[in-house]
Length: 191
Image 1 (cartoon, rainbow, N blue to C red):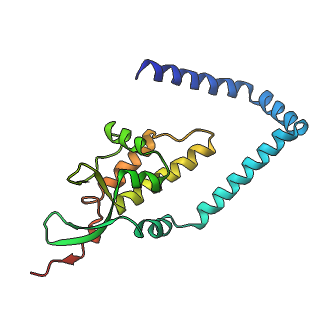
Image 2 (image 1 turned 30 degrees about the vertical axis):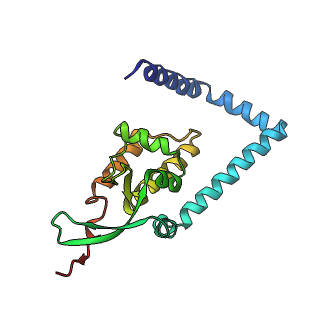
Image 3 (image 1 turned 135 degrees about the vertical axis):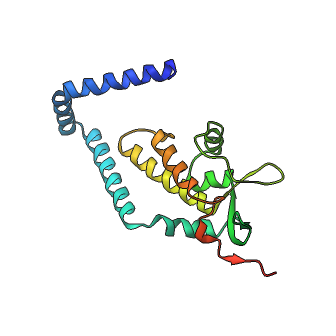
């Protein structure tokens, strides 16, 4: 653990302990401020409203269905064979930039995650060196990142790649064969 991370960890522990010891006093101050400060009251009301809306949206929507509409329309279709080269699947491929657009993060974040081994290297690379991700990999990454963003936002943190998110993405991506689920290889070459 680096010195900077150690200091942050110690500070976080200090802040947790401080809150635990002074919880009642802090809550009393918040109640008084809420009663007397209309701007503070409006801000909290707006935050609560947005949180309720976000929760309702999460309950209603099916991520795969939502992603399917946006991802299937774009991306370059390519033929990918299984390991035995007996079956293939037609899969849409996306560059790092397009993946970043679909996920809603900066392209440099994805490059940094790859270089730091927090995100597995792309299975496919074009002749010009561009990395390509399959639509299935994009589904997994987007779903995991979206849930992590919401989880962190609800706790008041900015989004970042944490260990939990890293492990979740790696586990799900490792279940794919060459970036494609095994049951997607349904077509055979006609020889």
